[in-house]
Length: 179
Image 1 (tube, rainbow, N blue to C red):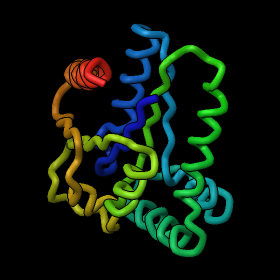
Image 2 (image 1 turned 180 degrees about the vertical axis):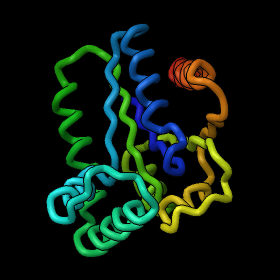
Image 3 (image 1 turned 90 degrees about the vertical axis):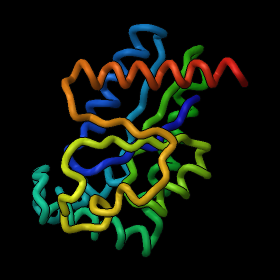
Image 4 (image 1 turned 180 degrees about the horizontal axis):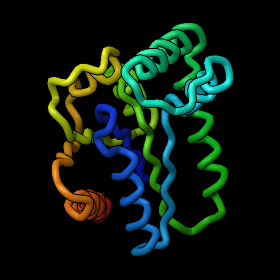
């Protein structure tokens, strides 16, 4: 099982990167890819109780970030959610004879480090836009304040991003051979 923590500012192409990775490994190896966000449950709370409809405005990004901070401080909910998801994946994949790749979306540097240790994960930063842009919340605005294992610049076409996905697959293949 390979575990990646993927991070980047809003709109950097994280989900697209994971989607391309998933399609590539499924087609080439018949492997499976899981995509989990540390704010999945927070988004559900925002939808149910605050009327959020998926808008990605600065105001809603700040609201989601603040809700995550509150739930992290009060009950460590986002991290526990990821642990439960990870446990469920292990149960689901136990009887399958295939490689499993898990992408955990986390933006807060202290949570990235914690998850890296907990899940023995590698970290990925996806960069796209002017890095001086402020979103008004610490999760987006401080995302680059971490020493990532891999950094991919997403300034080009979808085809160019796909080449970076293939590059990561090849890196991981080489690492697997040397273990």
